[in-house]
Length: 190
Ligand code: UDP
Ligand code: MG
Image (cartoon, rainbow, N blue to C red; front, top):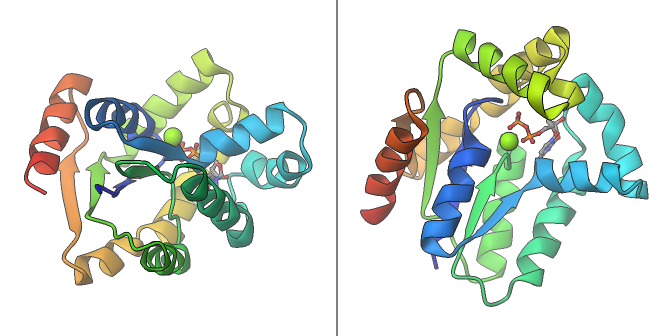
């Protein structure tokens, strides 16, 4: 099995690269953000709970995202592996994911971080907001808060995976195809 955490700030390109990598290796692409947006679009109770957090650029409570991850893993018993995109977002979530992996006889092979500087992130998110209509990409205040929350709560996860010798930063700038090449080269070596 090949289980990868694709890590990076909002706008780093996790969704784009996760989809490419999942296609190439026949892995299940698990984006908690995409799942939450679908729940919101369908007007489910879970979606209603999540929306307030997402609109402010805050995190949906751990229990909610962890339940999503657990149920997705259980829905794909024959998966060749998973790419986690946008999860974990806190060290506590990373610890819970490890426990869940152990429980299922699985493990994370690598945490690949897409490095992109803040100015470029803001530019990409505003561009995405203009085309996709994602509300949290259209407000500069919400974008700034998401990046701030990323630095405070998500970036410390790097230390967690670094200790496990699983942290692999790659340059997340340039052409999408070039970034995929860097990612592919790393994954081939796992
Ligand atoms: N979100 C969350 N936990 C998750 C995934 C997403 O709280 O595990 C929320 C959070 O409010 C985040 C939003 O959903 O700002 C969008 O997340 P996504 O990963 O899709 O966006 P990105 O950070 O890649 O721009
Ligand atoms: Mg995303």
